[in-house]
Amino acid sequence: MKSTIMKHNASIFLVAFAISLTVFVQSCTKTNVDTVYKTDALVESVIVPNSDVPVPLNFVLDTTFNNEKSHSNVNWKSRYFDFSDTWLTGRFGEFHFVPDFSVPLNKLGGLHTPMSKGVQLKNLNFNEKYPADQFWSTGPNTQGPPCYFRFNANDLSKNYLKFYVLVSTMNTSEPGRDGYIQCGQSYMGTQFMDSTRRVVDPTSDTCWLVAQPGTWKQQGNGYVFTADFTFNRYLHNTPGKNDGDPITKPVNVYLSYNGSYDFLTAGGPAGTLRCGFSASFSFLRSDYFDKTATKLYLKKPTAAEKANSDAAFLINKTYGTYSGSVADQMFINANMVFSKSHQ
View (cartoon, rainbow, N blue to C red):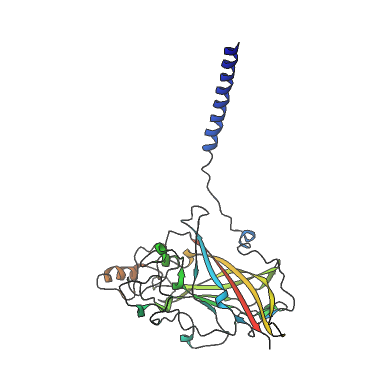
């Protein structure tokens, strides 16, 4: 009797095992599913979710505010090889707002002069065979206070935003990407004067975001507006474009107000009012780079580099090179703190 029960249980076990194995094999054969990333407006609008804090109707951010750059940041992210939701991330070291009046060109971003010896912030692409006084600088960028991002919650037609980053200050804090002649700088097409990657071409280093007037709209508790996004340049091989013409495309920028707080000074009414904004947008790098370019154009090649650079100048349509190790779509997120002292 005991033997019969054991044989019966064994039969049940074998049947159950066969069923489970079949289910397992079938489930494994269904895992090869192509990922589809939606790009409709609803998905794009959550690059930075609209703030849970509505902007007060009487809120005005004007030139009485300073931008606290030390408490602000501009970050980027992109999918690795565009095959999954595995992200590569980083930030830009130098950025600032620009006034809505003319200033000398040498007072804006993109001008590089040697740093002083002993400065800790060095070029992450620094070639160790060169002396310390050959580090690049982040430019004079003397447009500190006051802040030139103007925002009026009651009258969006008065809003103004002109902003830049220095492309060569892009970094990931990973030596394997940021180090001497590594791939990180090619994500945004940094143009070097020669292959030592020690001297950045200043004429192609500034990336601009300029809001188009009259395009600001409220969306939920936040805002959306259209901006001209400019970086990289055309070579002479693009029909209708001259060598050095900037490449500009429109992008949708999403903005959220993150609240404010009045930090009062102990023992008196004076203090500092601080507020925060976040903005984000995405773009396709292929809109700004020649993806078919296989040779690197250098403005000042060595004798050994000249033949390759000359060939690139005759073939390439844009400056810089396109890296395929990150996805075509890149996301930019900026978080800014502004403040003004009470009189």
